[in-house]
Image 1: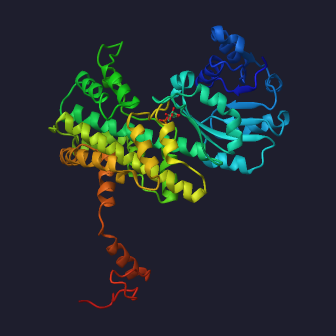
Image 2: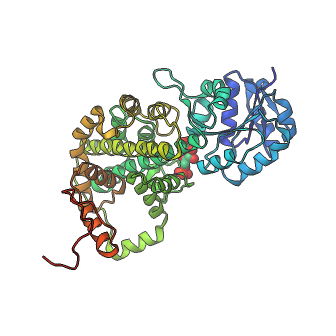
Length: 465
Ligand code: 6PG
């Protein structure tokens, strides 16, 4: 049977995706810039090799696929995608469809769609790392709905399935919406990881726990409301021994975090949307600070090490993480709602929560409840959904105690603390922005609204009481 689908880019993710597609019964043509790589993939494909058609050139690849073709790009984001699209253009027909499955900046996807490419184009965010790509990723597509419908049978077949059997692959909205949702997913991924790292720091430096004891706690949490992929791997990470020294692996790793930039994109975009996502911003900030190792060492030499022993009950930490997680996701979903309004996309919040339930890095049990809460009323902030409002009420004292005790003892908790700050702002009916407005009026005559509704928009700033 002649393939109806092809794939370009046989790195780790591309190879895994191609094998997944073949395994689900779809013949697939593959091409890589370096021919040896293509040959190696076929050699490693085992029984799947007869569903894989290796192509030597781009022209061969296109010729191997039955029209109307679908071609998945799994290559580095940015210029390489533009170059690849330009290289493909002479070979493709108008109704051939190219799906960019990389971590593209959604602005680029918007731009490419608006540029009038001589073929159909879909932006497709894929999450789940190599394992996900091979056995079931989460897929977030954006572009014309009809283009998604064409590839949906393959994409839903290869995607992860939630517990209720629903495939975690869906059309998110027009233009760059798929890559936008993937970007927010990554921002939340940064935040989830940072909050886990902060509680790990409290256990290690505050409570004096060793890696094995920390692993036991994470393992326990993975049976409760925090059940998630990231908690599960944190339990495994803290249980692993360094084969070279026999010491806990985690204790042998330099505390300097890398990043490819998708978390930063989320933070920057949130600023453009005036959407408050402080937990994600704090996570990006923390990665940036972690990279400045020399300055941190100089700081410690001058001021002494920050974290001091700090007594917190494990349950309190768990509650803090539960509250922090809900607050972070509430911010992320609100940001998506803001984007839907700004860009005129039909982003469907419950659908997004459902797609995130399995396959992706931020998959967790809580997303089931989030999908249900958002389905009740997508316009309502998640913190006001009765189920989550109750959960927050229960978990909040834990978060407050962890932030208060932790910071009092020198523990840096940027993500957890900024979640709490945001929450307290969100439940303050009479805030302090009257002072901001008065200052703006004082120096710039910007005017303000009076509480009593009278029409005197400026203050008597020359006069003292
Ligand atoms: C996923 C991941 C993945 C992403 C990195 C981000 O959903 O599978 O989000 O797509 O590229 O996890 O990584 P950095 O930490 O390197 O920015």
